Length: 356
Image (cartoon, rainbow, N blue to C red):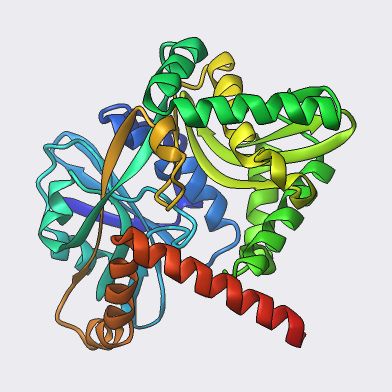
């Protein structure tokens, strides 16, 4: 087994093709967060992005994208922004995780949305959860029929509010792929407002993330969808697309239209737009949105944990992060605690707004 570490930008065309071919070997490997385009994009704006190219007797057997920080602390590429992580390789690849880390110059590798079935990292899981996926392979009509059966109240509410929005504001129009940079800027403004309103960290306060999103929009790897009511933009979604798979990323809406549940209307319209444009599934990401239960057709088992070698950097990292990660995991796994934490964050955001 040979492992070579390089920057994604230094891979050749044949290597990129092999990466894409390996994505076809497993259903969940086709996710955009595991595509070479994602690693290449983040590599434009982050210095620590690397990829380990794993070779065996038959040739390239896998690609392991990661980010390397101080003291050899490693994370998946775009950590904190990604909803699926792992090594892009055949399931039968036999490789020791700590050997992989040693070859990458890493003391530790943290993950929080790892494909749980990857045997390489299975001994290092500390928690397992699932990511819901909308299935659209049989078309939108079949998807909507599933939604009506799985969550009839949710479907009825969405369609009712959709009609009411059309009557009160203007005829609804859905643009699946907007190339307008003003639409993108508006979505980021809406999302920043949501982050601040709910006490979360504003991702768009980080210039590199803004530049990354703009880059994906310009290259077509990112798809910006907008819901209009008359002349009013009501909601929008920016997702990543790799062939037949869409990864939900940044949904947002204009709070002036909050009573119409524009986010839920937007998700239903997104499903319709994706089905009409060759997208067969939408990975919705892990989260506490209850409506996802009705939308999902299947789930991707994901895992949280860390691989560590005996090194000073790993010990220091453990001391800094493990207590916080355990507390966060307890909240995520308990719906009542999740709701309480959400209320606390929103209260904090309101108080912070009054002080400022």
